[in-house]
Amino acid sequence: MSLILRPLLPADESRVREIHQALLADGFEFLLHDGPWSEVIEHHRREALGEGLAPGRVRCSYLVAEQVNADGTAGPILGRVSIRHELNDYLRTVGGHVGYGVAPEHRRQGHATEILRQSVALLAAEGVDKVLVTCDDDNIASAKTIEACGGVLEDIRPVEGESPKRRYWITAAR
Image (cartoon, rainbow, N blue to C red; front, side):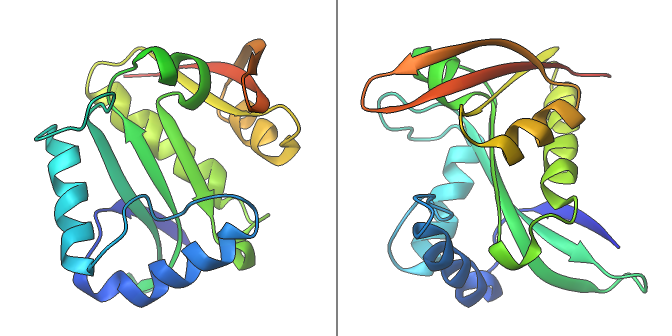
């Protein structure tokens, strides 16, 4: 089984909203924009193009991770990723280039590692040589995922009002 990263589609609404609700219990917002589904899709399309960005936002591709079955057919949505194509001050400390999440029922199966691996490859194709990925200091699973993708810990930084952040750099191969 493999997975692909792709933009949201109209048919994704119920599954994505279901995962969003499940992950809110962990304090993780799977869906980064609210409203009617057509507006959610349009918002993410514009962000991926860098059009009409709100102050403090950078161009960002929001993609879902979809299982590809052995016969080539599409399986369920397993997770999502936000790929920030550049860094601002906030992202340099807290968010990094890549933010990902996996639905609870699909965790511990290597999906997060594959999502991150593909995200780094997409950034490398755009000319990003070093990819910053962060996680909460106490998120051992995410730290292991980042390290499995070649992440090298630079430091752990305090963040006002939040958990300290582990900051890793991954050298992107072209």
